[in-house]
Image (tube, rainbow, N blue to C red):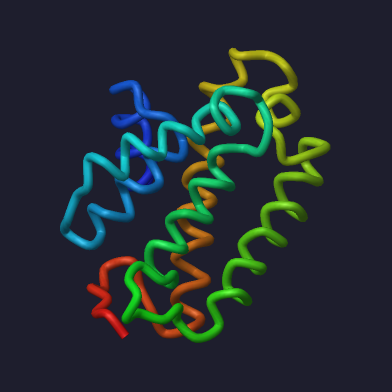
Length: 150
């Protein structure tokens, strides 16, 4: 079992959801934390506010990627190729996860069975985390880098 998977299971057992876990792990890679951000990510749990809509691993992954490539201040710009990187994450998720489960919504991925959450979600979180790292690496970035305002 990978160290990422062990951390995912630990955070999951502590009651955090997919979107929160992705951001917590990303912030840990940077050597930082942000309680307000993790609370905010709770709004994506269970598919946008618990609605069962868009999977929190996808939306959380998009937020994690944006943490590294997005704009956060007036004097800052998005990283070059940010739109392309985000498109790659979304396309991958649609092709891999959407095709496997017949869609990208929580209810589809879990097949309306809450018991599937324990089996499917940790692996899905790990896949998204790895995909975000892979996309960043292709563009010579990493989760551990500290980004200065541009």
